[in-house]
Image 1 (cartoon, rainbow, N blue to C red):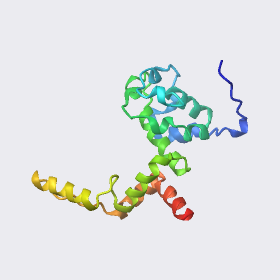
Image 2: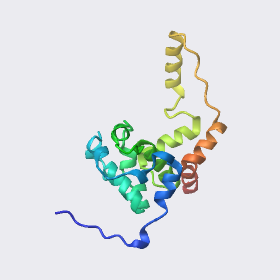
Image 3: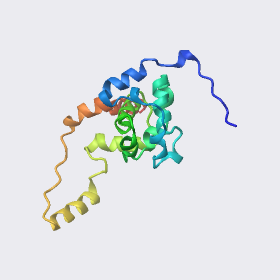
Length: 177
């Protein structure tokens, strides 16, 4: 028998469902009928703390902190199987991307992603393009007559940092130093 968790109504964010639905539009989670088809086809279901339909249900109930701190939003492989199977057209994959952005803005980010964020912030690439690795990549690209890799303009990444909440994470880490 599983242990029941009691949640105080003052801990619910009743506007959470509308906040998400407003950004998602016609593929809104408000259409979800909790049939569980999304969860039955999920490729990572055994590794997550909340099944896809439970993430949606938690959003509908206003369990903002539970959803944003869940490993489900980060473990999902974004294979889109849930979205393809949904009889109501709920775009779970899009909702998940939105939830990841919200989680980052509010500081819920797994530790293993922080290094990637720092690398992206420093040079505009997810994988460091420096030193011996850069020389190796350049040599291979030359061999295949591919154009040189042009580093991204870091100023252009600013809007992405703001929209996704990455900037908040970077500020926190700088303040900790």
